[in-house]
Image 1 (cartoon, one colour):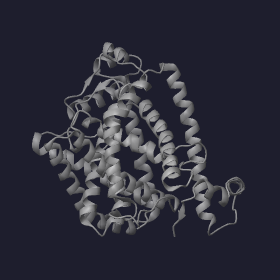
Image 2: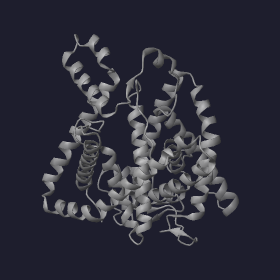
Image 3: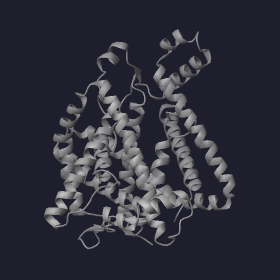
Image 4: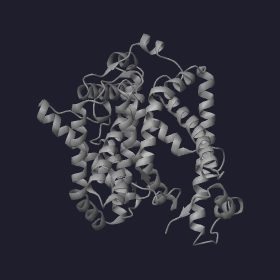
Length: 426
Protein backbone atom coordinates (compact mmCIF):
# COMPACT_ATOMS: atom_id res chain seq x y z
CA UNK A 1 0.00 0.00 0.00
CA UNK A 2 1.42 3.37 -1.07
CA UNK A 3 0.20 6.34 0.95
CA UNK A 4 0.03 9.97 -0.12
CA UNK A 5 1.72 12.62 2.01
CA UNK A 6 -1.58 13.90 3.37
CA UNK A 7 -2.70 10.38 4.30
CA UNK A 8 0.55 9.88 6.24
CA UNK A 9 0.11 13.30 7.85
CA UNK A 10 -3.47 12.37 8.79
CA UNK A 11 -2.34 9.08 10.35
CA UNK A 12 0.47 10.89 12.18
CA UNK A 13 -2.01 13.36 13.68
CA UNK A 14 -4.62 10.72 14.57
CA UNK A 15 -2.16 8.38 16.27
CA UNK A 16 -0.50 11.30 18.06
CA UNK A 17 -3.95 12.28 19.38
CA UNK A 18 -4.83 8.70 20.36
CA UNK A 19 -1.50 8.29 22.14
CA UNK A 20 -2.09 11.48 24.09
CA UNK A 21 -5.59 10.35 25.01
CA UNK A 22 -4.30 6.96 26.16
CA UNK A 23 -1.64 8.46 28.44
CA UNK A 24 -4.05 11.03 29.86
CA UNK A 25 -6.61 8.31 30.55
CA UNK A 26 -4.01 6.10 32.22
CA UNK A 27 -2.87 8.87 34.57
CA UNK A 28 -6.46 9.97 35.22
CA UNK A 29 -7.25 6.45 36.47
CA UNK A 30 -4.03 5.85 38.42
CA UNK A 31 -3.45 9.37 39.80
CA UNK A 32 -7.09 10.57 39.80
CA UNK A 33 -6.02 13.85 38.24
CA UNK A 34 -5.78 15.28 34.75
CA UNK A 35 -2.23 15.50 33.42
CA UNK A 36 -1.34 16.78 29.98
CA UNK A 37 1.49 14.32 29.36
CA UNK A 38 2.70 15.99 26.19
CA UNK A 39 5.58 18.36 25.69
CA UNK A 40 3.12 20.27 23.52
CA UNK A 41 0.08 22.17 24.79
CA UNK A 42 -2.14 20.72 22.07
CA UNK A 43 -3.42 17.17 22.67
CA UNK A 44 -0.69 15.45 20.66
CA UNK A 45 2.18 13.12 21.51
CA UNK A 46 4.24 13.12 18.26
CA UNK A 47 6.31 10.08 19.27
CA UNK A 48 3.19 7.92 18.96
CA UNK A 49 2.51 9.34 15.51
CA UNK A 50 6.10 8.74 14.36
CA UNK A 51 6.05 5.14 15.62
CA UNK A 52 2.75 4.48 13.85
CA UNK A 53 3.94 5.94 10.53
CA UNK A 54 7.11 3.82 10.65
CA UNK A 55 4.96 0.76 11.32
CA UNK A 56 2.80 1.55 8.28
CA UNK A 57 5.91 1.59 6.11
CA UNK A 58 7.69 -1.45 7.54
CA UNK A 59 5.10 -3.98 8.73
CA UNK A 60 3.56 -4.66 5.28
CA UNK A 61 6.94 -6.15 4.28
CA UNK A 62 6.66 -8.62 7.19
CA UNK A 63 3.06 -9.73 6.68
CA UNK A 64 4.06 -13.39 6.44
CA UNK A 65 5.15 -13.48 10.09
CA UNK A 66 3.14 -12.15 13.04
CA UNK A 67 6.09 -12.81 15.36
CA UNK A 68 8.51 -10.70 13.32
CA UNK A 69 5.85 -8.01 12.86
CA UNK A 70 5.29 -7.76 16.61
CA UNK A 71 9.05 -7.79 17.29
CA UNK A 72 9.51 -4.95 14.80
CA UNK A 73 6.68 -3.05 16.55
CA UNK A 74 8.37 -3.53 19.92
CA UNK A 75 11.70 -2.29 18.53
CA UNK A 76 10.19 0.73 16.79
CA UNK A 77 8.12 1.91 19.75
CA UNK A 78 11.01 1.46 22.21
CA UNK A 79 13.60 3.18 20.03
CA UNK A 80 11.31 6.09 19.09
CA UNK A 81 10.36 6.54 22.76
CA UNK A 82 14.03 6.60 23.78
CA UNK A 83 15.03 9.04 21.05
CA UNK A 84 12.05 11.35 21.61
CA UNK A 85 12.72 11.48 25.35
CA UNK A 86 16.34 12.33 24.62
CA UNK A 87 15.30 15.09 22.19
CA UNK A 88 12.95 16.62 24.75
CA UNK A 89 15.74 16.79 27.31
CA UNK A 90 18.23 18.24 24.82
CA UNK A 91 15.82 20.95 23.62
CA UNK A 92 15.59 22.22 27.21
CA UNK A 93 19.21 22.46 28.42
CA UNK A 94 18.31 24.56 31.47
CA UNK A 95 15.96 21.88 32.76
CA UNK A 96 16.61 18.58 34.47
CA UNK A 97 13.96 15.99 33.63
CA UNK A 98 13.15 12.90 35.63
CA UNK A 99 14.36 9.92 33.62
CA UNK A 100 12.14 7.02 32.62
CA UNK A 101 12.91 3.30 32.69
CA UNK A 102 11.46 1.30 29.85
CA UNK A 103 12.85 -1.45 27.64
CA UNK A 104 16.09 0.34 26.84
CA UNK A 105 16.56 1.29 30.47
CA UNK A 106 17.09 -2.36 31.28
CA UNK A 107 14.50 -2.78 34.08
CA UNK A 108 11.94 -5.59 34.26
CA UNK A 109 9.12 -3.09 34.85
CA UNK A 110 10.26 -1.05 31.86
CA UNK A 111 10.28 -4.16 29.69
CA UNK A 112 6.71 -4.95 30.75
CA UNK A 113 5.57 -1.42 29.90
CA UNK A 114 7.28 -1.62 26.50
CA UNK A 115 5.58 -4.95 25.75
CA UNK A 116 2.18 -3.53 26.70
CA UNK A 117 2.67 -0.44 24.53
CA UNK A 118 3.87 -2.55 21.59
CA UNK A 119 0.84 -4.84 21.96
CA UNK A 120 -1.52 -1.85 21.86
CA UNK A 121 0.23 -0.44 18.79
CA UNK A 122 0.08 -3.78 17.01
CA UNK A 123 -3.61 -4.20 17.86
CA UNK A 124 -4.32 -0.73 16.43
CA UNK A 125 -2.38 -1.64 13.29
CA UNK A 126 -4.39 -4.83 12.75
CA UNK A 127 -7.86 -3.60 13.80
CA UNK A 128 -8.05 0.20 13.90
CA UNK A 129 -5.86 1.16 10.97
CA UNK A 130 -8.04 -0.45 8.25
CA UNK A 131 -10.94 1.67 9.51
CA UNK A 132 -8.84 4.83 9.45
CA UNK A 133 -7.62 3.99 5.96
CA UNK A 134 -11.21 3.58 4.79
CA UNK A 135 -12.02 6.98 6.32
CA UNK A 136 -9.23 8.67 4.36
CA UNK A 137 -10.63 7.20 1.15
CA UNK A 138 -14.10 8.59 1.91
CA UNK A 139 -12.92 12.12 2.81
CA UNK A 140 -12.11 14.35 -0.20
CA UNK A 141 -8.37 14.69 -0.77
CA UNK A 142 -8.49 18.49 -0.63
CA UNK A 143 -10.16 18.42 2.78
CA UNK A 144 -7.52 16.01 4.10
CA UNK A 145 -4.72 18.19 2.73
CA UNK A 146 -6.11 21.34 4.38
CA UNK A 147 -6.75 19.64 7.74
CA UNK A 148 -3.31 18.01 7.76
CA UNK A 149 -1.52 21.23 6.80
CA UNK A 150 -3.37 23.34 9.39
CA UNK A 151 -2.73 20.97 12.28
CA UNK A 152 0.91 20.41 11.33
CA UNK A 153 1.46 24.18 11.38
CA UNK A 154 -0.31 24.46 14.75
CA UNK A 155 1.81 21.63 16.11
CA UNK A 156 4.99 23.39 14.92
CA UNK A 157 3.92 26.67 16.56
CA UNK A 158 3.03 24.79 19.75
CA UNK A 159 6.47 23.20 19.82
CA UNK A 160 8.16 26.58 19.38
CA UNK A 161 6.12 28.04 22.26
CA UNK A 162 7.03 25.13 24.56
CA UNK A 163 10.67 25.43 23.54
CA UNK A 164 10.69 29.15 24.37
CA UNK A 165 9.17 28.40 27.76
CA UNK A 166 11.90 25.85 28.47
CA UNK A 167 14.59 28.27 27.37
CA UNK A 168 13.25 31.06 29.53
CA UNK A 169 13.06 28.93 32.64
CA UNK A 170 10.89 29.01 35.73
CA UNK A 171 8.43 31.45 37.20
CA UNK A 172 11.00 33.31 39.26
CA UNK A 173 13.14 34.08 36.26
CA UNK A 174 10.10 35.18 34.31
CA UNK A 175 9.11 37.64 37.04
CA UNK A 176 12.14 39.77 36.17
CA UNK A 177 11.21 39.77 32.48
CA UNK A 178 7.47 40.30 32.83
CA UNK A 179 7.77 44.09 32.79
CA UNK A 180 9.33 43.92 29.30
CA UNK A 181 6.96 41.41 27.73
CA UNK A 182 4.01 40.51 29.95
CA UNK A 183 2.21 38.34 27.37
CA UNK A 184 5.28 36.24 26.56
CA UNK A 185 6.10 35.95 30.25
CA UNK A 186 2.62 34.75 31.18
CA UNK A 187 2.55 32.27 28.29
CA UNK A 188 5.93 30.82 29.23
CA UNK A 189 4.96 30.72 32.90
CA UNK A 190 1.74 28.84 32.08
CA UNK A 191 3.55 26.26 29.91
CA UNK A 192 6.23 25.80 32.56
CA UNK A 193 3.64 25.18 35.31
CA UNK A 194 1.78 22.72 33.09
CA UNK A 195 4.97 20.73 32.49
CA UNK A 196 5.76 20.74 36.21
CA UNK A 197 2.39 19.13 36.92
CA UNK A 198 2.81 16.53 34.17
CA UNK A 199 6.42 15.71 35.09
CA UNK A 200 6.88 16.18 38.86
CA UNK A 201 10.62 15.46 38.67
CA UNK A 202 11.34 18.40 36.39
CA UNK A 203 13.42 21.26 37.83
CA UNK A 204 15.35 24.25 36.56
CA UNK A 205 19.14 24.15 36.74
CA UNK A 206 20.61 27.09 38.60
CA UNK A 207 23.17 29.45 37.07
CA UNK A 208 26.15 27.74 38.71
CA UNK A 209 25.12 24.33 37.33
CA UNK A 210 24.71 25.77 33.85
CA UNK A 211 28.10 27.49 33.94
CA UNK A 212 29.97 24.46 35.26
CA UNK A 213 28.25 22.21 32.74
CA UNK A 214 29.30 24.30 29.72
CA UNK A 215 31.65 22.36 27.50
CA UNK A 216 31.57 21.99 23.75
CA UNK A 217 29.36 19.03 22.83
CA UNK A 218 28.93 17.96 26.46
CA UNK A 219 26.77 14.87 26.89
CA UNK A 220 24.43 13.65 24.15
CA UNK A 221 23.80 17.08 22.61
CA UNK A 222 23.20 17.98 18.96
CA UNK A 223 26.83 18.86 18.32
CA UNK A 224 28.07 15.57 19.82
CA UNK A 225 25.64 13.50 17.78
CA UNK A 226 26.46 15.33 14.57
CA UNK A 227 30.19 14.61 14.96
CA UNK A 228 29.45 11.01 15.91
CA UNK A 229 27.45 10.74 12.68
CA UNK A 230 30.13 12.45 10.59
CA UNK A 231 33.12 10.51 11.94
CA UNK A 232 31.35 7.13 11.88
CA UNK A 233 30.06 7.73 8.34
CA UNK A 234 33.66 8.41 7.31
CA UNK A 235 35.08 5.40 9.18
CA UNK A 236 32.25 3.13 8.03
CA UNK A 237 32.88 3.88 4.38
CA UNK A 238 36.56 3.07 4.85
CA UNK A 239 35.80 -0.20 6.66
CA UNK A 240 33.32 -1.35 4.00
CA UNK A 241 35.69 -0.42 1.17
CA UNK A 242 38.54 -2.41 2.73
CA UNK A 243 36.24 -5.34 3.49
CA UNK A 244 34.96 -5.56 -0.09
CA UNK A 245 38.48 -5.12 -1.46
CA UNK A 246 40.24 -7.78 0.61
CA UNK A 247 37.39 -10.28 1.18
CA UNK A 248 35.37 -10.06 -2.04
CA UNK A 249 38.23 -8.86 -4.25
CA UNK A 250 36.18 -5.87 -5.48
CA UNK A 251 37.29 -2.31 -4.82
CA UNK A 252 34.19 -0.15 -5.11
CA UNK A 253 32.62 2.96 -3.66
CA UNK A 254 30.56 2.32 -0.54
CA UNK A 255 29.59 5.96 -0.03
CA UNK A 256 25.99 7.11 0.37
CA UNK A 257 26.56 10.48 -1.32
CA UNK A 258 28.03 11.77 -4.54
CA UNK A 259 30.95 13.56 -2.97
CA UNK A 260 33.16 12.26 -0.20
CA UNK A 261 33.62 8.84 1.45
CA UNK A 262 30.60 8.86 3.77
CA UNK A 263 28.37 5.85 4.49
CA UNK A 264 25.18 7.19 6.08
CA UNK A 265 24.09 3.71 7.13
CA UNK A 266 27.07 3.63 9.50
CA UNK A 267 26.75 7.26 10.58
CA UNK A 268 23.04 7.15 11.38
CA UNK A 269 23.45 3.68 12.88
CA UNK A 270 26.09 5.02 15.28
CA UNK A 271 23.73 7.81 16.37
CA UNK A 272 20.85 5.36 16.91
CA UNK A 273 23.02 2.99 18.96
CA UNK A 274 24.46 5.88 20.97
CA UNK A 275 21.09 7.35 21.92
CA UNK A 276 19.23 4.10 22.52
CA UNK A 277 21.94 2.08 24.28
CA UNK A 278 23.57 4.72 26.45
CA UNK A 279 21.49 3.70 29.48
CA UNK A 280 22.90 0.18 29.13
CA UNK A 281 26.53 1.34 29.20
CA UNK A 282 26.91 0.42 32.87
CA UNK A 283 25.32 -3.00 32.51
CA UNK A 284 26.80 -6.36 31.51
CA UNK A 285 28.06 -6.81 27.94
CA UNK A 286 25.35 -9.38 27.19
CA UNK A 287 22.60 -6.80 27.62
CA UNK A 288 24.29 -4.44 25.18
CA UNK A 289 24.92 -7.31 22.74
CA UNK A 290 21.29 -8.45 22.71
CA UNK A 291 19.98 -4.90 22.33
CA UNK A 292 22.48 -4.19 19.54
CA UNK A 293 21.60 -7.50 17.82
CA UNK A 294 17.90 -6.60 17.70
CA UNK A 295 18.12 -2.85 17.09
CA UNK A 296 20.92 -3.17 14.52
CA UNK A 297 19.04 -5.78 12.51
CA UNK A 298 15.84 -3.72 12.59
CA UNK A 299 17.77 -0.60 11.56
CA UNK A 300 19.37 -2.35 8.58
CA UNK A 301 15.96 -3.69 7.54
CA UNK A 302 14.47 -0.19 7.82
CA UNK A 303 17.24 1.34 5.68
CA UNK A 304 16.57 -1.21 2.93
CA UNK A 305 12.84 -0.47 2.94
CA UNK A 306 13.49 3.29 2.96
CA UNK A 307 15.78 3.32 -0.09
CA UNK A 308 13.41 1.05 -1.98
CA UNK A 309 10.29 3.09 -1.18
CA UNK A 310 11.83 6.56 -1.60
CA UNK A 311 14.39 6.12 -4.39
CA UNK A 312 13.15 2.91 -5.99
CA UNK A 313 16.57 1.31 -5.57
CA UNK A 314 18.10 -1.61 -3.68
CA UNK A 315 21.72 -1.42 -2.51
CA UNK A 316 22.05 -4.85 -0.87
CA UNK A 317 20.24 -8.17 -1.12
CA UNK A 318 20.91 -11.10 1.25
CA UNK A 319 18.31 -13.42 -0.28
CA UNK A 320 20.96 -16.05 -1.02
CA UNK A 321 22.27 -16.06 2.55
CA UNK A 322 20.80 -18.40 5.18
CA UNK A 323 18.45 -17.07 7.89
CA UNK A 324 17.74 -13.85 6.01
CA UNK A 325 14.66 -11.70 6.57
CA UNK A 326 13.25 -10.66 3.22
CA UNK A 327 16.77 -10.34 1.86
CA UNK A 328 17.14 -7.09 3.80
CA UNK A 329 19.09 -8.41 6.78
CA UNK A 330 20.12 -11.77 8.25
CA UNK A 331 21.09 -13.37 11.54
CA UNK A 332 24.83 -13.28 10.78
CA UNK A 333 24.85 -9.51 10.29
CA UNK A 334 22.59 -9.07 13.32
CA UNK A 335 25.30 -10.92 15.26
CA UNK A 336 27.86 -8.46 13.90
CA UNK A 337 25.58 -5.57 14.92
CA UNK A 338 25.51 -6.98 18.46
CA UNK A 339 29.31 -7.20 18.60
CA UNK A 340 29.66 -3.73 17.11
CA UNK A 341 27.17 -2.28 19.62
CA UNK A 342 29.09 -3.79 22.54
CA UNK A 343 32.44 -2.48 21.35
CA UNK A 344 30.91 0.88 20.49
CA UNK A 345 29.13 1.47 23.80
CA UNK A 346 31.87 0.07 26.04
CA UNK A 347 35.06 1.18 24.25
CA UNK A 348 34.83 3.39 21.17
CA UNK A 349 32.13 5.93 22.02
CA UNK A 350 33.57 6.98 25.43
CA UNK A 351 36.92 7.69 23.78
CA UNK A 352 35.41 9.50 20.79
CA UNK A 353 33.19 11.53 23.12
CA UNK A 354 36.19 12.61 25.18
CA UNK A 355 38.08 13.74 22.08
CA UNK A 356 35.12 15.75 20.75
CA UNK A 357 34.61 17.53 24.09
CA UNK A 358 38.22 18.73 24.07
CA UNK A 359 37.57 20.91 21.00
CA UNK A 360 37.51 24.66 21.85
CA UNK A 361 33.86 25.83 22.02
CA UNK A 362 34.05 28.59 19.38
CA UNK A 363 36.07 26.54 16.91
CA UNK A 364 33.77 23.59 17.47
CA UNK A 365 30.60 25.58 16.79
CA UNK A 366 32.02 27.13 13.62
CA UNK A 367 33.26 23.78 12.32
CA UNK A 368 29.94 22.13 13.11
CA UNK A 369 27.90 24.62 11.10
CA UNK A 370 30.31 24.68 8.14
CA UNK A 371 30.47 20.90 7.84
CA UNK A 372 26.72 20.58 8.41
CA UNK A 373 25.88 23.00 5.58
CA UNK A 374 28.24 21.18 3.20
CA UNK A 375 26.77 17.80 4.11
CA UNK A 376 23.18 19.02 3.68
CA UNK A 377 24.00 20.33 0.19
CA UNK A 378 25.69 17.03 -0.62
CA UNK A 379 22.63 15.07 0.54
CA UNK A 380 20.16 17.22 -1.41
CA UNK A 381 22.20 16.93 -4.60
CA UNK A 382 22.56 13.17 -4.14
CA UNK A 383 18.84 12.73 -3.56
CA UNK A 384 17.98 14.74 -6.68
CA UNK A 385 20.47 12.76 -8.81
CA UNK A 386 19.20 9.44 -7.42
CA UNK A 387 15.56 10.25 -8.11
CA UNK A 388 16.42 11.44 -11.61
CA UNK A 389 18.39 8.25 -12.26
CA UNK A 390 15.39 6.13 -11.26
CA UNK A 391 12.91 8.13 -13.36
CA UNK A 392 15.31 8.26 -16.32
CA UNK A 393 15.07 4.49 -16.82
CA UNK A 394 11.48 4.87 -18.04
CA UNK A 395 11.30 8.57 -18.97
CA UNK A 396 14.67 9.62 -20.44
CA UNK A 397 13.42 12.95 -21.84
CA UNK A 398 14.09 16.06 -19.70
CA UNK A 399 11.15 18.24 -18.63
CA UNK A 400 12.94 21.15 -16.96
CA UNK A 401 16.31 22.82 -16.47
CA UNK A 402 17.10 20.85 -13.29
CA UNK A 403 16.67 17.52 -15.09
CA UNK A 404 18.89 18.75 -17.93
CA UNK A 405 21.65 19.68 -15.47
CA UNK A 406 21.32 16.36 -13.66
CA UNK A 407 21.46 14.39 -16.90
CA UNK A 408 24.53 16.30 -18.08
CA UNK A 409 26.50 15.98 -14.83
CA UNK A 410 25.19 12.72 -13.33
CA UNK A 411 24.38 10.39 -16.21
CA UNK A 412 23.77 6.64 -15.85
CA UNK A 413 27.42 5.71 -16.27
CA UNK A 414 28.56 8.02 -13.47
CA UNK A 415 25.77 6.93 -11.12
CA UNK A 416 26.42 3.22 -11.73
CA UNK A 417 30.15 3.71 -11.25
CA UNK A 418 29.46 5.42 -7.91
CA UNK A 419 27.04 2.69 -6.76
CA UNK A 420 27.83 -0.50 -8.73
CA UNK A 421 25.49 -2.68 -6.62
CA UNK A 422 22.47 -0.42 -7.08
CA UNK A 423 19.38 -2.11 -8.54
CA UNK A 424 16.31 -0.19 -9.73
CA UNK A 425 13.10 -1.84 -8.51
CA UNK A 426 9.87 -2.03 -10.45
